[in-house]
Amino acid sequence: MEKLVGVALVAVTGVLLCKKEAGGAALLLTLAAAVYAVFWGLERMQFVVAALSGLFDRVGLDSAYWKILMKIVGIAYVGEFGTALCRDAGCQALGEQIAIAAKFSILAVSLPVLLQLVEVMERFG
Picture 1 (tube, one colour):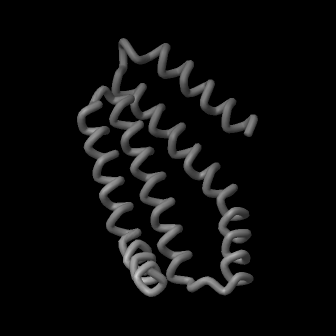
Picture 2: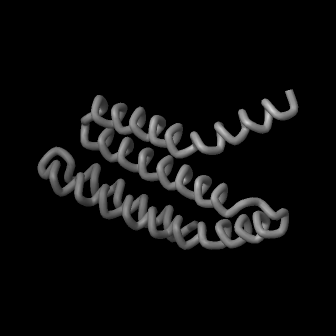
């Protein structure tokens, strides 16, 4: 974690120093640091994925639910990443549209789970 925070501090310092004179360079520096953070997080995510996969196998849940869960996490992460980049670039309206699109995408991906839940409730209700 210390390495990630160090990279972020260097990037923020660089952005603050060159933002007025070279806005494009500042945005590229922000993007580079953000990409580093994404890959840093993905390395740690491997442990979580393995643990949750084992849990799903142990309790006998259908792997389709696991795939849906991973899609939802991916959509949320990519949507937040895109939203933050747009905000950093001064395009707040575009960032908000990305956030809304991510929420609709999550709803669409989770629809099979919601339909299954309704079926279960109808059987017991």
